[in-house]
Length: 384
Image 1 (tube, one colour):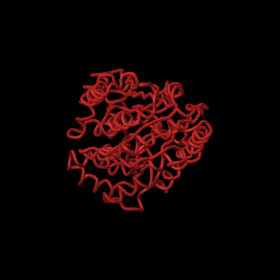
Image 2: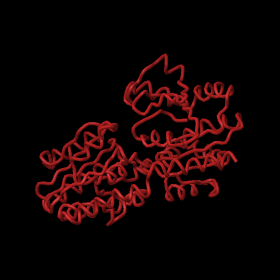
Image 3: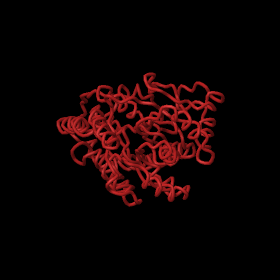
Image 4: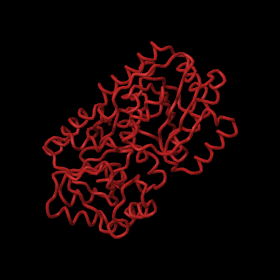
């Protein structure tokens, strides 16, 4: 079960599900998109209201107001969970798996009435932002932790956060995300000392740290002539996007910093070949939002890009400091600027070694086939 099936930010799930050997997959979501992640081999339960109001969205950005209406209304008027339950009563699945804690809260009563075990995976905003914006989730999470059979995070950091929220440790499990490695082949890059082309690919929201990236770039630029940075992403927070543009203009960075639109996922591998390193200084926001395990950092490293990031939540497990990239304290623009200078000055031999280690790290620890095997094991434990 999802709120939306399937946005590009959850693209790794589209690689995970087909790797669940021996599993018959059905998808439930009040908003379904027939994009490149839509798998006709699955059984889908499209919401009748969506068929009437917006029958054929082909991207996650089509009909944004209708999407927000149909997904948001479920929090107060859960028409889709009620409808889905009636469909599943005829042929109940062996188990239910909700993606995002907020989504699981909609389906935990359905799982109980169907007498089926429930798993839930937490991803990011559902850890702290959702309970802060809607305090009712505090009590709902207590019920969820009591009723769900498995609560899944992407890392030890996620498990610690869930345990601090009240989840029993014996219910916790880890399934790390992973890119499809053959979709992000390693690309050998030649970067000499005195050269650096940075890129950040992320939806423009506060937790992605775009302002931190810009300020660190501005600080490092006088020592790094000819350096460039590209920011690519959907302008979800239009106020923030406008602020980024003002920053670029006010500091005369137009010749060095370029803002472009959302890059389609199937074009990402080719797009990343144009750069030397990836930058992603994630941060906590005043409303409690934070990242968990951004898969784009794994995709970048798989393609051979060292990563500049912060010590935010799961990121130090994704990017190994001094090994596959450079990790600075969250919010410390001076430290990040220092890492930018260091990468700019890095010679060809050291850069090539870091690039290769980045690919090997993803292959060894974030292989989607290994994650699928772990998820199959969790499902077997639930069913036994």
